[in-house]
Amino acid sequence: MIKEKKEKKIGKKFFIIFFLILIIFFSIYFYKNYKNNKEKLEMTKPYNFENIQTQRSEDFTDYITNYSKTTCEALLYKNIDDKKENQKCKEGVYLKTYGSKDGFSKVKFEDSFYYTKSENLENVSKGDNFKVIKGILLVNTKYKLSEDFNPGFDKFVSNQVDLMTIDAKREKVDLDIYRDFISYEEQKQYRKNSPKFKNSIIYQLYDVPGHNESQIGECIDIISKDEDKNLNEKFKETKEFLWMKKNAHKYGFILRFPENKEDITNYKFTPWHFRFVGVEVAKKIYDKDITLEEFLKK
Image (cartoon, rainbow, N blue to C red; front, side, top):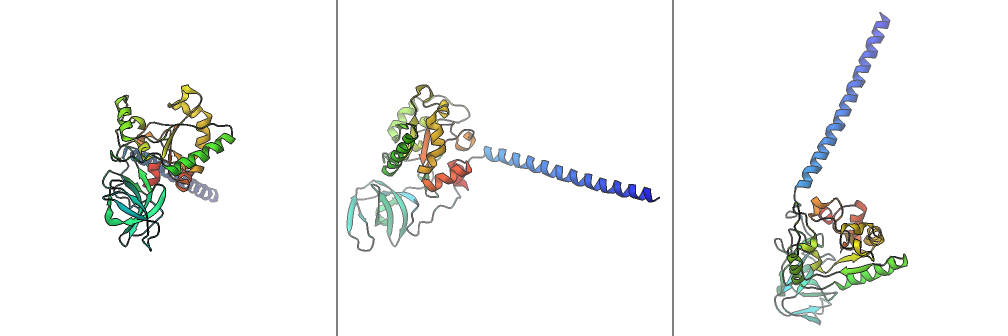
């Protein structure tokens, strides 16, 4: 009788343990399945930045809030208090804007910061034009730049490239810059030679004019001495790419279109193309191993 009771207790315990194991197993299974399905669903959804809150512009800031265009010849002041004229900016010039306050806007002109009357500026960051999120200008298959936006290669970015090139050379790696700034008109010519792509995944070089971020003037395309591996996916095998992949973020650059991220960026893997986003942002993107779109979405 006692033996029977013990066997019943053991059987009961075994059943409870077995039942708990089943619950845990199916919980893990359904959670993983849910997570995978969610990730797959997210991959099919286009990134929507319409409702993302951008940097506040009711005050001066160190981050770009929008792009503006001068509506007349604008006087630029180094010091907002004494209003002493330091520069003049002609009509129709695009300026990075860093917030506004008391009728004045903080702008960047020829690689220096100035203040100018807000009434002389038109905010051009509207709709799909000049999309600025978290202080970064986003250009891709959706967001574009204007035809007359022609800044050339950014001086500060150029200095960062020089510094990076010198440091790479110390490690016996020669970084040869093939392209930096690409104008709207140049993009038209590239577009004429555009090959056909499957599933709307394209090379940025052949994008519609205005949608190539190299027009921003903050991107570089790198080539190596091995010509067979230049401007194609084989570039990932070169020592130049391996050095950039490991070190570019230290100078503010990111691999803009990484491998296996085509469904997010909408561009084919482009191992030779790097975008300057600043050291702080580049490190975050590098550490998390994410794309610019993913960073801006969070």
